[in-house]
Length: 91
Image (cartoon, rainbow, N blue to C red; front, side, top):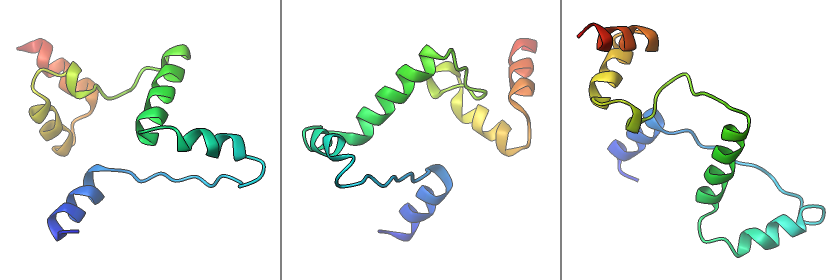
């Protein structure tokens, strides 16, 4: 992996892993063999559970912020999410 890509991944991504038991989790393992995108499935299930629990993310998603790059810059400058939102309303 190129150094720049590795650097970007370290800064912008989180790697999660889990161990499944070959015997007690055999049903899950067999099912996962049929799934095209395990990551996509996990994200879909997590988002459905988050919605079911009415979980509200403290940071807006890219779709929720008009100028996402400016939002990211404001975070790097040490502003809190509330500060960014107040800044937007003041304009």
